[in-house]
Image 1 (spheres, rainbow, N blue to C red):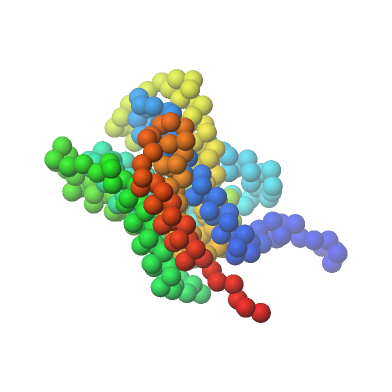
Image 2 (tube, rainbow, N blue to C red):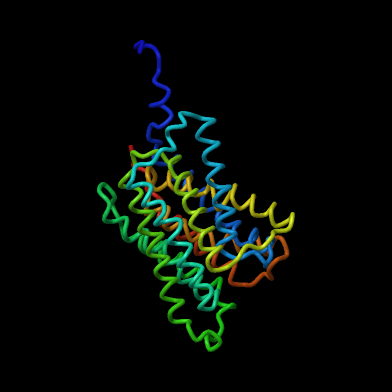
Length: 303
Protein backbone atom coordinates (compact mmCIF):
# COMPACT_ATOMS: atom_id res chain seq x y z
CA UNK A 1 0.00 0.00 0.00
CA UNK A 2 1.24 3.44 -0.88
CA UNK A 3 2.37 5.40 2.15
CA UNK A 4 0.09 8.29 1.15
CA UNK A 5 -2.98 6.08 0.72
CA UNK A 6 -5.08 5.92 3.90
CA UNK A 7 -6.16 2.54 5.15
CA UNK A 8 -9.92 3.11 5.00
CA UNK A 9 -10.72 -0.23 6.59
CA UNK A 10 -8.66 0.55 9.63
CA UNK A 11 -10.05 4.08 9.77
CA UNK A 12 -13.62 2.78 9.62
CA UNK A 13 -13.10 0.64 12.69
CA UNK A 14 -10.75 2.91 14.58
CA UNK A 15 -11.80 3.36 18.21
CA UNK A 16 -14.10 6.34 18.67
CA UNK A 17 -13.25 9.10 21.16
CA UNK A 18 -14.76 8.38 24.55
CA UNK A 19 -17.21 11.30 24.51
CA UNK A 20 -18.44 10.43 21.03
CA UNK A 21 -18.91 6.76 21.91
CA UNK A 22 -20.75 7.72 25.09
CA UNK A 23 -23.08 10.00 23.11
CA UNK A 24 -23.72 7.19 20.63
CA UNK A 25 -24.49 4.82 23.51
CA UNK A 26 -26.98 7.33 24.90
CA UNK A 27 -28.77 7.32 21.53
CA UNK A 28 -29.61 3.68 22.30
CA UNK A 29 -31.17 4.79 25.61
CA UNK A 30 -33.29 7.33 23.71
CA UNK A 31 -34.44 4.66 21.26
CA UNK A 32 -35.31 2.29 24.11
CA UNK A 33 -37.48 5.09 25.45
CA UNK A 34 -39.77 4.61 22.42
CA UNK A 35 -40.21 0.89 23.10
CA UNK A 36 -43.26 1.18 25.37
CA UNK A 37 -45.05 3.56 22.99
CA UNK A 38 -44.44 1.39 19.93
CA UNK A 39 -45.43 -1.74 21.87
CA UNK A 40 -48.65 -0.01 22.95
CA UNK A 41 -49.39 1.02 19.37
CA UNK A 42 -48.75 -2.55 18.21
CA UNK A 43 -51.58 -3.74 20.45
CA UNK A 44 -52.21 -7.29 21.60
CA UNK A 45 -52.64 -10.50 19.68
CA UNK A 46 -49.01 -11.04 18.69
CA UNK A 47 -47.25 -13.52 21.04
CA UNK A 48 -44.01 -12.22 22.64
CA UNK A 49 -41.64 -14.66 20.95
CA UNK A 50 -43.24 -14.07 17.53
CA UNK A 51 -42.82 -10.32 17.96
CA UNK A 52 -39.22 -10.89 19.08
CA UNK A 53 -38.48 -13.04 16.03
CA UNK A 54 -39.84 -10.47 13.60
CA UNK A 55 -38.27 -7.41 15.21
CA UNK A 56 -34.84 -9.01 15.65
CA UNK A 57 -34.90 -10.17 12.02
CA UNK A 58 -35.56 -6.57 10.96
CA UNK A 59 -32.96 -5.31 13.45
CA UNK A 60 -30.29 -7.70 12.21
CA UNK A 61 -31.05 -6.72 8.61
CA UNK A 62 -30.81 -3.03 9.54
CA UNK A 63 -27.36 -3.47 11.05
CA UNK A 64 -26.27 -5.66 8.11
CA UNK A 65 -27.35 -3.03 5.57
CA UNK A 66 -25.41 -0.39 7.51
CA UNK A 67 -22.33 -2.61 7.63
CA UNK A 68 -22.44 -3.32 3.89
CA UNK A 69 -23.12 0.31 3.00
CA UNK A 70 -20.26 1.67 5.10
CA UNK A 71 -17.93 -1.32 4.54
CA UNK A 72 -16.17 -3.54 4.88
CA UNK A 73 -18.92 -6.15 5.17
CA UNK A 74 -16.59 -8.52 7.01
CA UNK A 75 -17.01 -6.28 10.05
CA UNK A 76 -20.20 -8.28 10.67
CA UNK A 77 -18.24 -11.48 11.19
CA UNK A 78 -18.13 -12.12 14.95
CA UNK A 79 -15.63 -14.08 16.95
CA UNK A 80 -17.03 -17.12 18.73
CA UNK A 81 -16.90 -15.39 22.14
CA UNK A 82 -18.64 -12.26 20.81
CA UNK A 83 -21.32 -14.34 19.07
CA UNK A 84 -22.06 -16.38 22.19
CA UNK A 85 -22.05 -13.22 24.30
CA UNK A 86 -24.53 -11.64 21.88
CA UNK A 87 -26.94 -14.58 22.15
CA UNK A 88 -26.55 -14.51 25.93
CA UNK A 89 -27.37 -10.83 26.10
CA UNK A 90 -30.09 -10.57 23.47
CA UNK A 91 -31.92 -13.89 23.62
CA UNK A 92 -31.50 -14.99 27.24
CA UNK A 93 -32.43 -11.52 28.50
CA UNK A 94 -35.70 -11.54 26.55
CA UNK A 95 -36.62 -15.07 27.65
CA UNK A 96 -36.19 -14.11 31.32
CA UNK A 97 -37.93 -10.75 30.86
CA UNK A 98 -40.98 -12.26 29.15
CA UNK A 99 -41.20 -14.93 31.85
CA UNK A 100 -41.07 -12.24 34.53
CA UNK A 101 -43.88 -10.23 32.95
CA UNK A 102 -46.02 -13.35 32.66
CA UNK A 103 -45.58 -14.49 36.27
CA UNK A 104 -45.40 -11.19 38.17
CA UNK A 105 -47.16 -7.81 38.10
CA UNK A 106 -45.65 -5.95 35.10
CA UNK A 107 -44.89 -2.68 36.93
CA UNK A 108 -42.98 -4.31 39.76
CA UNK A 109 -41.24 -6.76 37.41
CA UNK A 110 -40.21 -3.93 35.10
CA UNK A 111 -38.77 -1.95 38.01
CA UNK A 112 -36.70 -4.92 39.18
CA UNK A 113 -35.50 -5.51 35.61
CA UNK A 114 -34.39 -1.87 35.44
CA UNK A 115 -31.78 -2.72 38.06
CA UNK A 116 -29.55 -3.56 35.08
CA UNK A 117 -28.50 0.10 35.03
CA UNK A 118 -27.37 0.09 38.66
CA UNK A 119 -25.65 -3.29 38.21
CA UNK A 120 -23.87 -1.98 35.11
CA UNK A 121 -22.47 0.90 37.14
CA UNK A 122 -21.30 -1.36 39.96
CA UNK A 123 -19.82 -4.05 37.68
CA UNK A 124 -17.98 -1.47 35.59
CA UNK A 125 -15.66 -1.01 38.56
CA UNK A 126 -14.13 -4.42 37.79
CA UNK A 127 -13.18 -3.46 34.24
CA UNK A 128 -9.50 -2.74 33.57
CA UNK A 129 -8.84 0.97 33.25
CA UNK A 130 -12.29 1.98 34.58
CA UNK A 131 -12.44 4.05 37.75
CA UNK A 132 -15.70 3.87 39.69
CA UNK A 133 -16.37 6.79 42.01
CA UNK A 134 -18.98 7.51 44.65
CA UNK A 135 -20.61 9.91 42.18
CA UNK A 136 -21.45 7.01 39.86
CA UNK A 137 -22.95 4.95 42.68
CA UNK A 138 -25.02 7.82 44.09
CA UNK A 139 -26.13 8.76 40.58
CA UNK A 140 -27.22 5.18 39.87
CA UNK A 141 -29.18 5.03 43.14
CA UNK A 142 -30.88 8.33 42.28
CA UNK A 143 -31.80 6.90 38.89
CA UNK A 144 -33.31 3.81 40.46
CA UNK A 145 -35.31 6.04 42.81
CA UNK A 146 -36.64 7.95 39.81
CA UNK A 147 -37.65 4.70 38.10
CA UNK A 148 -39.32 3.56 41.32
CA UNK A 149 -41.34 6.77 41.55
CA UNK A 150 -42.55 6.41 37.98
CA UNK A 151 -44.11 3.01 38.68
CA UNK A 152 -45.35 3.98 42.15
CA UNK A 153 -48.90 4.59 40.97
CA UNK A 154 -48.94 1.25 39.16
CA UNK A 155 -47.85 -0.82 42.12
CA UNK A 156 -50.63 -3.14 43.20
CA UNK A 157 -51.08 -6.13 45.42
CA UNK A 158 -49.50 -9.27 44.00
CA UNK A 159 -52.25 -11.51 45.38
CA UNK A 160 -53.49 -12.08 41.83
CA UNK A 161 -50.07 -13.42 40.87
CA UNK A 162 -49.37 -16.56 42.91
CA UNK A 163 -46.07 -17.03 41.06
CA UNK A 164 -44.99 -13.42 41.65
CA UNK A 165 -41.89 -14.40 43.62
CA UNK A 166 -40.70 -16.60 40.79
CA UNK A 167 -41.46 -13.79 38.35
CA UNK A 168 -39.48 -11.31 40.43
CA UNK A 169 -36.56 -13.76 40.41
CA UNK A 170 -36.70 -13.92 36.62
CA UNK A 171 -36.83 -10.11 36.46
CA UNK A 172 -33.71 -9.82 38.62
CA UNK A 173 -31.99 -12.50 36.56
CA UNK A 174 -32.76 -10.53 33.40
CA UNK A 175 -31.18 -7.45 34.99
CA UNK A 176 -28.06 -9.47 35.80
CA UNK A 177 -27.89 -10.83 32.26
CA UNK A 178 -28.14 -7.42 30.59
CA UNK A 179 -25.69 -5.79 32.99
CA UNK A 180 -23.08 -8.54 32.61
CA UNK A 181 -23.58 -8.61 28.84
CA UNK A 182 -23.07 -4.86 28.66
CA UNK A 183 -19.97 -4.82 30.85
CA UNK A 184 -18.38 -7.88 29.23
CA UNK A 185 -18.76 -6.20 25.84
CA UNK A 186 -15.91 -3.93 26.94
CA UNK A 187 -13.61 -6.96 27.12
CA UNK A 188 -14.07 -7.61 23.39
CA UNK A 189 -13.81 -3.98 22.30
CA UNK A 190 -11.65 -4.97 19.32
CA UNK A 191 -14.61 -6.75 17.71
CA UNK A 192 -16.58 -4.32 15.48
CA UNK A 193 -20.05 -3.45 16.74
CA UNK A 194 -21.52 -4.44 13.36
CA UNK A 195 -20.93 -8.04 14.49
CA UNK A 196 -24.08 -7.68 16.61
CA UNK A 197 -26.04 -8.47 13.41
CA UNK A 198 -25.44 -12.27 13.48
CA UNK A 199 -26.48 -12.36 17.13
CA UNK A 200 -29.70 -10.58 16.16
CA UNK A 201 -30.36 -13.16 13.44
CA UNK A 202 -29.63 -16.01 15.85
CA UNK A 203 -31.97 -14.45 18.43
CA UNK A 204 -34.69 -14.19 15.77
CA UNK A 205 -34.25 -17.86 14.86
CA UNK A 206 -34.33 -19.01 18.49
CA UNK A 207 -37.37 -16.83 19.20
CA UNK A 208 -39.18 -18.29 16.16
CA UNK A 209 -38.44 -21.80 17.43
CA UNK A 210 -39.87 -20.86 20.84
CA UNK A 211 -42.92 -19.31 19.18
CA UNK A 212 -43.67 -22.44 17.17
CA UNK A 213 -43.06 -24.69 20.18
CA UNK A 214 -44.89 -22.77 22.90
CA UNK A 215 -47.09 -20.07 21.36
CA UNK A 216 -48.23 -20.56 17.78
CA UNK A 217 -48.05 -18.06 14.93
CA UNK A 218 -50.62 -15.28 14.69
CA UNK A 219 -51.14 -13.31 11.47
CA UNK A 220 -50.24 -9.63 12.12
CA UNK A 221 -52.37 -6.85 10.70
CA UNK A 222 -50.88 -4.26 8.35
CA UNK A 223 -50.53 -1.75 11.19
CA UNK A 224 -48.85 -4.33 13.40
CA UNK A 225 -46.36 -5.11 10.65
CA UNK A 226 -45.54 -1.40 10.35
CA UNK A 227 -44.99 -1.03 14.11
CA UNK A 228 -42.85 -4.17 14.31
CA UNK A 229 -40.68 -2.92 11.45
CA UNK A 230 -40.26 0.38 13.32
CA UNK A 231 -39.33 -1.59 16.45
CA UNK A 232 -36.74 -3.52 14.45
CA UNK A 233 -35.31 -0.35 12.95
CA UNK A 234 -35.01 1.39 16.31
CA UNK A 235 -35.25 0.06 19.87
CA UNK A 236 -34.94 -3.61 18.88
CA UNK A 237 -32.29 -3.32 16.23
CA UNK A 238 -29.95 -0.40 15.65
CA UNK A 239 -30.12 0.47 19.35
CA UNK A 240 -28.16 -2.68 20.19
CA UNK A 241 -25.30 -1.69 17.89
CA UNK A 242 -25.31 1.84 19.31
CA UNK A 243 -25.23 0.46 22.86
CA UNK A 244 -22.40 -1.89 21.89
CA UNK A 245 -20.37 1.08 20.66
CA UNK A 246 -21.00 2.92 23.91
CA UNK A 247 -20.05 -0.06 26.05
CA UNK A 248 -16.88 -0.81 24.09
CA UNK A 249 -15.49 2.68 23.73
CA UNK A 250 -17.47 5.04 25.97
CA UNK A 251 -17.87 5.75 29.67
CA UNK A 252 -19.51 2.55 30.95
CA UNK A 253 -20.39 3.80 34.44
CA UNK A 254 -21.87 7.07 33.14
CA UNK A 255 -23.95 5.20 30.54
CA UNK A 256 -25.23 2.97 33.30
CA UNK A 257 -26.57 6.01 35.13
CA UNK A 258 -28.03 7.41 31.89
CA UNK A 259 -29.78 4.09 31.37
CA UNK A 260 -32.50 5.18 33.78
CA UNK A 261 -33.45 7.95 31.36
CA UNK A 262 -35.20 5.21 29.36
CA UNK A 263 -38.02 5.12 31.90
CA UNK A 264 -38.40 8.91 31.92
CA UNK A 265 -38.35 9.18 28.12
CA UNK A 266 -40.83 6.31 27.86
CA UNK A 267 -43.28 7.83 30.34
CA UNK A 268 -42.99 11.33 28.84
CA UNK A 269 -43.63 10.04 25.33
CA UNK A 270 -46.67 8.03 26.42
CA UNK A 271 -48.13 11.12 28.09
CA UNK A 272 -47.35 13.38 25.14
CA UNK A 273 -49.19 11.04 22.78
CA UNK A 274 -52.15 10.70 25.11
CA UNK A 275 -51.42 7.05 25.85
CA UNK A 276 -50.92 7.68 29.58
CA UNK A 277 -52.09 10.24 32.12
CA UNK A 278 -49.60 12.78 33.52
CA UNK A 279 -48.68 12.45 37.19
CA UNK A 280 -46.82 14.63 39.63
CA UNK A 281 -44.07 12.04 40.00
CA UNK A 282 -42.91 12.59 36.41
CA UNK A 283 -41.47 16.03 37.21
CA UNK A 284 -39.75 14.68 40.31
CA UNK A 285 -38.36 11.71 38.38
CA UNK A 286 -37.07 13.89 35.54
CA UNK A 287 -35.40 16.15 38.09
CA UNK A 288 -33.74 13.17 39.77
CA UNK A 289 -32.49 11.81 36.44
CA UNK A 290 -31.05 15.19 35.44
CA UNK A 291 -29.32 15.57 38.81
CA UNK A 292 -28.03 11.99 38.64
CA UNK A 293 -26.60 12.55 35.16
CA UNK A 294 -25.02 15.82 36.26
CA UNK A 295 -23.49 14.16 39.30
CA UNK A 296 -22.12 11.18 37.39
CA UNK A 297 -20.93 13.13 34.35
CA UNK A 298 -17.16 12.97 33.73
CA UNK A 299 -15.38 16.00 35.15
CA UNK A 300 -13.35 18.09 32.75
CA UNK A 301 -9.74 18.32 33.62
CA UNK A 302 -8.43 21.78 34.33
CA UNK A 303 -5.67 22.94 32.08
